[in-house]
Length: 199
Image (cartoon, rainbow, N blue to C red; front, side, top):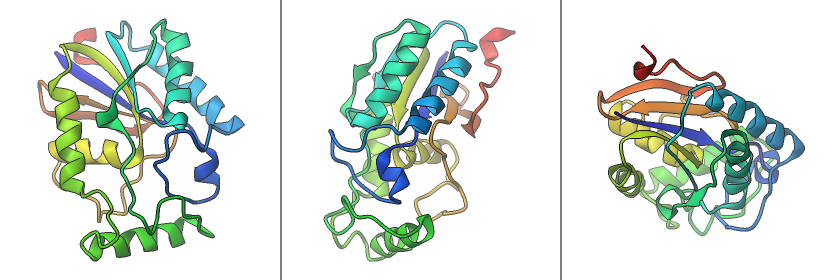
């Protein structure tokens, strides 16, 4: 059994600014983000034994992983394969008036064939699959970001791609994949799913 619980970090200062950014040590969790991380940690604890806990090195993800780790009794290990997608030079650390304005600029970068250096969807999928391939069997929690999580979900369900703006992974949610059965158990959920090994 290889089940991975992908958690999107709690709300950060960057989310409040409707921004994009991949800098490691900027944009900590907001108070709301810390509460989201605590709530998802309680849900993860309901899954039973967790064999490993990994985090993106980006501050907002690591802070989330620390909160989860305290709840489940595991220290998070940094893994660079689950780091935030680099949004390109035009969008990195850019702020917008709304999520809609941010998404419009994001879509323009994708449609321009990554003119300003945004990391491609295919590269995201390659590094996320590398992360999964290096995991041991069992239940792993991986705290990451919306696009890396969507990209790995897209390897199981090809209808999920970087131009599908109807699919959203909210902060402080989990998406769970059973890689042995090649099945998405939940996506962007605040509630832990029942795992196959629970009976």
